[in-house]
Length: 313
Image (cartoon, rainbow, N blue to C red; front, top):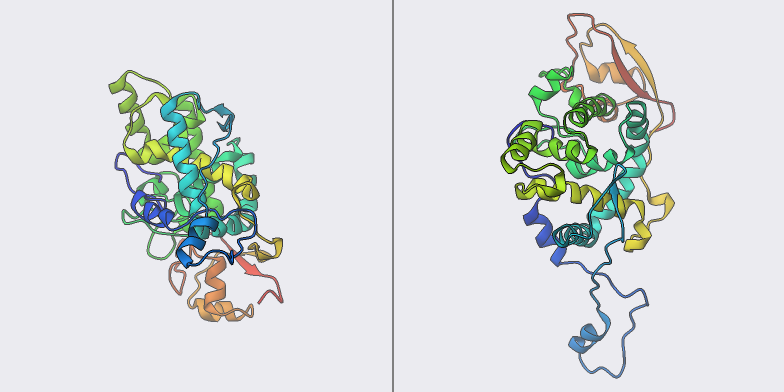
């Protein structure tokens, strides 16, 4: 979550995940068959239902920076996040489906800004690739606070909130991460600061007289944060390895749109949408940054509005 000094729970909060993860397990890759020699359902369960631990990869890296898995505590923290995120199967399937839809939007912006591709998994960790609003008010795919959004040039008011604009919010995330990388020297610390804030990381480095994310003792959320991103990178990058089998036709896809420019007020968005053969809901799905059913635009600012091409609905 892009903020300063206060830590907030992300979508993969400890309590919910722990409860959910207890309810799931791997089934043996062999087909489960009822054994006629077993005389009770309990014995059938005991003999055919299997829970497997996972093998932590021999080596891992974040944005090209190696993870010191030879250290016992680092190994255990990585193992924990792999287990938690693998066994939350319903969420894993949804993330894989959404990644197919939204990664093609995020990836080119990261590349253009010189931000490593691994940071797309930070957006997954922050929001699950949904336009959520946290209890603290962080909003959108990149969970940006209102003050930070305005600081980095986004328009945020009751009429327009560009934190919901995926492309513009991704650009703000890039700007922040590049600034953090310049400050701390590593992409791993830049990622940690996205959760704890640059001041939060700086204070702990000074207090502990230590450098490097893996050498710092931090609050639990930030201690898990980079490992959660790494786990998502590993699972979404190798879904079948973790028993996620999804047909290509089941993956979510972007609806093709064209962009029009508007530099005048829109007095009635439902009527405006209707001129393009859309209803209000369809229009807002593609332009979620418009927060009301009208656009004031007294300054005659040029807004880019997405319109689905014909025959998409």
